[in-house]
Amino acid sequence: MFKSDSQLQLDVMEELKWVPGVDHEEIGVSAKDGVITLSGAVSSYSAKLLAEQAARRVKGVRAIAEELQVRYPFQAKSSDPEIAKRIADILEWDSLVPHDKINVTVENAVVHLRGDVEWHYQKDLAFKDASKISGVLRVDNWINVKPSVSTADVEQRIEQAFERQADLEAEMLTVRTDGRKIILEGTVSTWGKRGIAERAAWAAPGVTQIEDKLVVS
Image: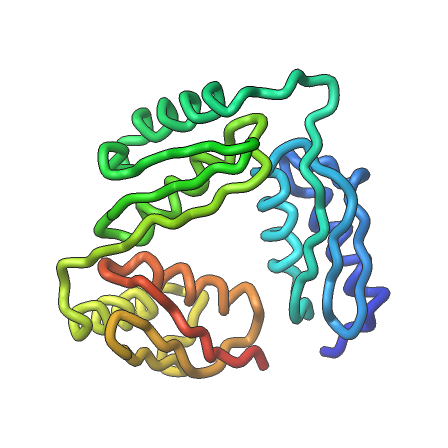
C-alpha cells in the first residue's frame, strides 16, 4: 500500500514517541518522496542512533537524511582523556568485546576505534559501547574484521540463519560470496525484514562486507 509523504511523516513521529531515551519533541521530521529527514537536537550520540533506527523501522521509508545535532545542555564538557578512560572501562566490562585488541583515541570528542577482531558483532558492540559515553560527538569505527573461516562456510551459516528466522521467507533469499564480501539478493516484504536479513548476515563469523541487493516489494 502506497503511503503519502504526510502519512509517512506522521508514522515516523509516532514511532519516535516509543523510543526510550529519545526526546521526540526535540526532533523535527519531514518527508519527501519517501525520504525522511530528521533534524533538531538530541542529548547523546546513542540517542541520535536510536532515532535513526526508529525511522528506518517504519514501513514505506526509502531513505533517511539525518541532520540531528548532539548537544549536552547543562553539562560541563568532558575532556578527551576522560572520554577515552570511560570508553576503555566500558569495553573492559563488556565480556563479549576483546578489549585488549582494540585501541581507543579521542580528539575533540570524536572517538577513533582501531584494532583487529574475528567477528563483526565484536566490532559492532565496540561501536555501541563507545556511543553510550556522555560527551561523545562522533564515533569512527576503523576496527578490522580478520576472520579465520572459509567463505563457503560463511555462506552456509548465513543461509542457515535465514532459515531460523520466523519473519523471513528464506526461499526468497540468496547468498553469494565475492572474496570476503557477502552479496544478498532476493525480495522481502518490508524494510524491517531487510534489516533482519542484514543483521543475520552480519552475525556470521568472517563477514567483513555486505552488499545488500534485496528488493522491498
